[in-house]
Image 1: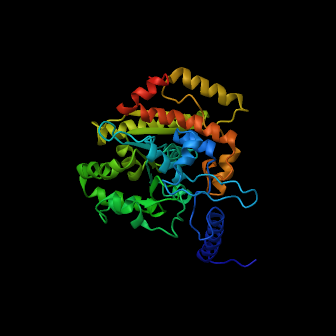
Image 2 (image 1 turned 180 degrees about the vertical axis):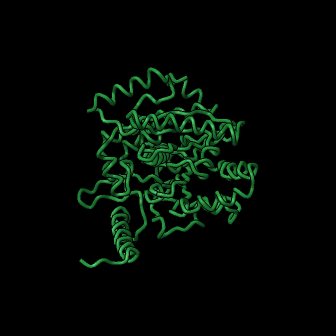
Image 3 (image 1 turned 45 degrees about the vertical axis):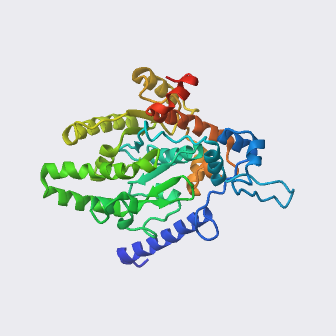
Length: 389
């Protein structure tokens, strides 16, 4: 069989891969190639989400300009959209937003220097969970793999360049992160996207900073935090999907974070890597920003399989030895989560969500929500009422 140029062969394979990727993404999009949130909420679901009974919601539909379509097959009204839910919450004062006078926005980095730990999956699902609850969320994709960006309807390296990412701000091409923020198919989630250029830029950043000296490096690593502080007042929670590395961008994310959500599978070699990650970030903070304040660091046990006795033993021992550092609940290794990722959707976005999987995910992420609310003075009475200190 004749050989061919490696470059020509790679060009052919890349073109085929990109065509396949575009086809898969379109399957999760609307006919005009824009991702939409197709899930609708029944009157019973909406009542729970809004905190009002179904009759009250129906009574206020006209005032809010809500007109539900009807199913032609049975004449029944179809459900409410997420936009409707948010409109009801605003009308009845049941939005869960932080109090701007007492509650600071919180920046959470979904971070682990080891790949395959469930870091991106955690970030995406947490964003969707918080949005369903009604919070205003900004997601910053700092991972050059850009899976988070794809899940929000943008095709990296086809639709985006480095000028659309945090690189544009870190390099001084734009003056504020506000210029990079995009809307998504979720009405209360905004996104700063990523693409492969983030990885390619690492070497350039290092070369540039080598000429600046130690103080120049420290100032650069604080830039992302400064940029987030300029836009944070528009949001309740800022989530950052960090790259699985210890490069300059990952360190910038670390310094920008108010809290760390560390994903860790229940395997000894994975957890050993997590311990090394903790030691490394301690060293980096000591060298770069010894005065950096952090609100909390929690470990979320991911990729958990209840069929494995070793997973349960690992989780129980981790809890025994580490107290409240690991969350109580675990993120299951779940078929619905895996299938959703193939179709660029989470179970939260399915038209008919898998209820058991949804309950599992919600129970896990509720602990994260509680950790967030514990940082907001205005939420303390509500937590105490629920028996949470």
